[in-house]
Amino acid sequence: MRVLLEIFGQTLSTLWAHKLRSFLTMFGIAWGVGSLLLLVGLGEGFRSGNKKQFDSLGENVMFIWGGRAPAVEGSFTGMRQYYLTYKDFLDVRRDCTDVKAVAPVISRGDLRSVSDFFQSSGQVMGVPAYFNQIRYLPINEGRWLNDLDDAQKRKVIVLGDEARRLLFPGRPPIGSTILINGTRFEVIGTLLPIGHGDNNTLNLRMFVPFNTMNQYFPPTVDVKDSISFMNYQPRSRELHEMAKLEVHKVIARNHGFDYGSADAFDEWDTIRTVDNVGKIFDAMNAFLGSVGLVTLALGAIGIINIMLVAVADRTREILQLQRERLGRLDSWKHDIAAAVGELVLAKVRGRVRVREIQAAVVDANRLIRRRVFVLDHAIGSDNHHLTHLARREPRDLYVCGRPAGKRHREERRLRNPELKDALRGGGDTRGGTPEPVQEDR
Image (tube, rainbow, N blue to C red):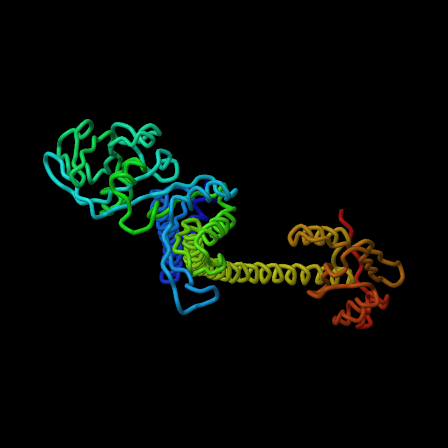
């Protein structure tokens, strides 16, 4: 616990010693994390909103309308208008194997709808009963169109959410009737809101059976069995290009032009649109994520910088303490070795005993905590001399304050002439005989 408190205290002291550097580092980390979360979240929010917008149309829905084809084969100057027909629908359903479902649609926006309470001029669409399997049309109240409604050409209608609000404000619409250009229709169902925000165009639509629409309100163009457009779905998302090519071939064959003329088709491939928008959002996420990662990297560099400063400070402190300890140790070594050397000289001169020298060496070994070996101390009867053998760690043996190696190195290093002559066996260099050793009584 004490160690943890010391570490915590050192951390706080280091941060306080480098206040500006620490603040910039923490700010960089916070900014990097915040920007990364914000930008990536923003990109994912756009992606999610775009996906919901396309999901409000339906899953893998593709649109095709009538277009303009070359008047003469191979000509790019003269163009003629062509319209889709019910025969095109039948041929696509029969010949296009990669098309899962296809639905013809008759759409009119010039019809006037009147109820007992209000009126509306929303779009009226004639669709088959399975149209809600291709497009997203959730039922709120009542029911959707069925095959009998279409086969018997019943005058029934399903209202969008905004059309219901306008025609029946605060009143139940199911079972009520409305007039569309003077023709009475019974309301059998209403839809939930489609889309987001103020997108009321989809919610103003009203749906009647296809055959009923074709009988009472056919397209205004002077073409037999014409339809406004077709909605179709490929068998899988990966096959949408093949499905589109098959539809092009059928329509080009029926209307007499080359299916390779891309400008002759007026269509909307929602699958390709979703993929392109997804690529844009992927690039946006990659860019925003890289910005956040760079910011985090800058914060990491700041952390490394602070750690480097802290380590440098601690290193200087450790080196200073080490120098002080080594200085004290060297001082102790020199002092102790000098004292031992004096004892050796005193012994050479016959003033101390061998036991006292050995005791001094042992005390010195304990003090400096290193191994010092004085293996043999011999005093001859005729020529008093001292023999030193340093067999292990000879650099740790200090004589007169200097390190002693092997004997030939020791003789070169020793500067005291009296001790040098004593080691060589010459005794006292001053010519006198050594004083006798005083024995203990």
